[in-house]
Length: 179
Length: 149
Image (tube, rainbow over all chains, first blue to last red):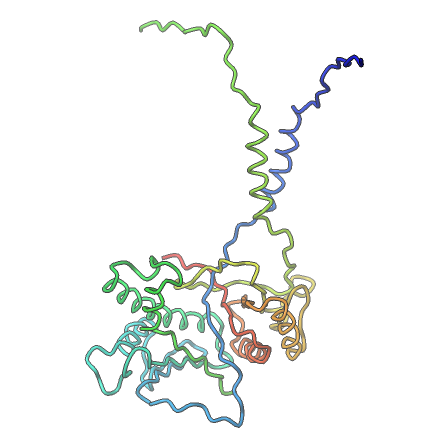
């Protein structure tokens, strides 16, 4: 019979493991940049077929916003200040008094944004921000009256959110600048 | 003044430190997973504009960046507005179409994040957007900072 050799258990000294781990941890702590990417999301339209005529749009459903390179704004040929844009847009999209001049229904409303080639990017983004703010307010109001919570509080891609989105679809057209 | 007698502990108190490596490793793994090591070296000056109605991009893996801004020249000087994709400046805007199309084939749910300097002109952006339309990358995102209310 073999006699089992009694051996003392070989131990790896683990006391420095914490030091090694700390060193790595500090390296990753320093190199990590937790920058969440934020921005204004948009979906570009597919390229236009040159032979195909653009679909007809009724004049009252289209809100033309023109911004020049100085940041001056025209909405449907009327000069307005940047701070008025949001309220005017909300009125145009929702059209509470069924005005003949404004959009037939929120889902028919189209906002067209046109700037010049020389317009600084920040002015363009400011305008786009106002348009987004108008839609956000409308969606929030609809969500609050239907479900009692703001639009952001709804579960992503839930039927409720889809319904609000269908009520106020963002139809924003970025027009090509005339050169 | 009342005299406080210091209570002496009968035995030596020690905090068990055997679990410390585990804790540290857990933190380490968290930071290893969240770290993005490969940052693009910017060849254009980038000063993002601010907006308040913005959304987060949750899936960073879908994002591909296009940078636009005045080119950085040697000697701290700024040149004309240029477009940078990945690590190189694209001079011929027509090349963007193929570049972005290749990326779209690799990742069909691609989101193109446009990081544009706030003083650059809209004209360049619209040229790039036309190329993106041709490439079929329709989901874009104008990268902005959050505006302080």
